[in-house]
Amino acid sequence: MAKSKNHTNHNQNSKAHRNGIYRPKRFRCPSMKGVDRKYLRNLRFARKHNKLIPKEDRRQLREERHKIKMAKRAAAKVESKTAGKATSTTS
Image (cartoon, rainbow, N blue to C red; front, top):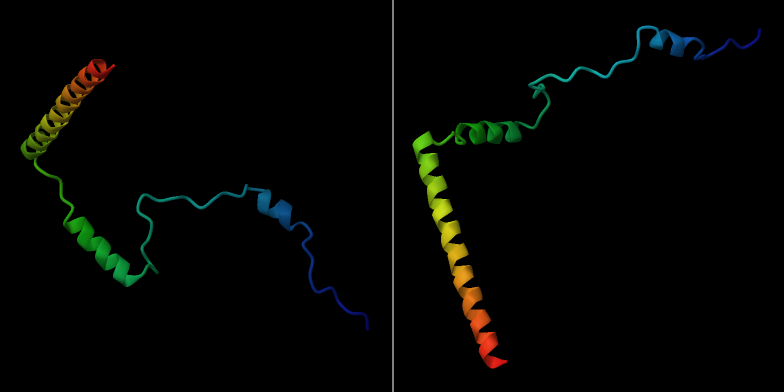
């Protein structure tokens, strides 16, 4: 008796493409199933302790940062002016 056919890929490609091959849909919150427990616990704490600062406090922080930035710019201007005078007197 002759050996029977073990495998063929005939027509499988056309069958697969009949309705199109799509990538799996990406959901907004992917499942955390199978993710390391230690990582998940850390993620939970990170979310818990990463709250937004109230608006007034944010405004105050922004103003303080702006003052620091302007002070640095003013200091740099004064420094460049004094450096320019020093070079002009030596030459």
